Image (cartoon, rainbow, N blue to C red; front, side, top):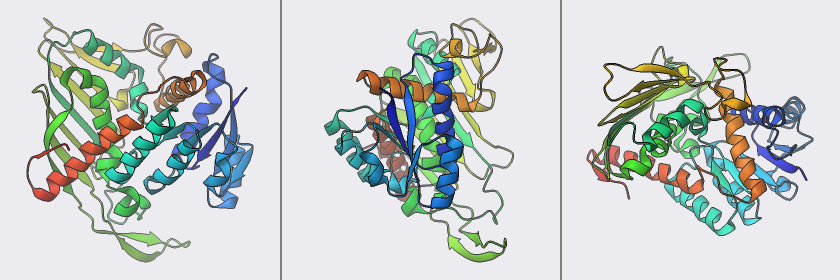
Length: 374
């Protein structure tokens, strides 16, 4: 029996996941059979057009109407609509994959985590960068002790789509809808990736400092003619920075910006140990920079061999994959867990752990001091 998939949201992430669902049977023949069943959105015209393009058989303008019809629910809407539909789906026994960050607030994230635990069905927090082959390769090196004792982690995520002060206002700039700005939108990815790579080696984050900065306090809303209709307040951060201390004594530094001129989607992470280091950049996602013990410099490892994670499903060695393929891998793992009654990581519990760090960074910024991660 095919799994009927319901998806809330049909814009950026809706396209990314719909593309992944369409590719699954082509490249992952052992994946569960799926039916793109119901697409959920508010604008009936745009929704109908998206459903036709994405291959969904049905549409709904109310997410509640979809829950009785689907076996799996993807919540890809804005952050402020993550909690209620996801919790309702879980209470109905429907597995949920939810985009990141898990929720705008720690309280809502906790409610989602608790609902997942009570439902005892697979849940997923959509941190797709865990499914980059080069990241999986790096994790293997760390687990095998190739880097020795982990001492430092450094991560940054830089974009420039808000450099122009006349860039249009959007929901991502409203604290009530988004929770935070660059911190939750971008920093959540980096913090989860660090947890994934070194969490087993260094433990959790004990304490941290944080700074959030907003450079443009209001942005325009444009009318249909491209004229400014009004200006709305920006109530989230444009950039953040944090210094963290792990349980093991290792340290980390993280930053993100949506106003970093010249950076389109520059997500990098580096891990330094007593015997070696690794460096990864999303802009060169098929490569991993590796410094091994005894070497004088980094070597560039092209992670496209058939023996590398997921690569045997794609092309011959050296034929690179792209950003969209991470969603195929993520969907394969999540839907396999659903079909087999297994577990999936990152789960809602993992998403909540990231939310705890986000909340602590905000708290550190408000207080202007080092704080513990409660």
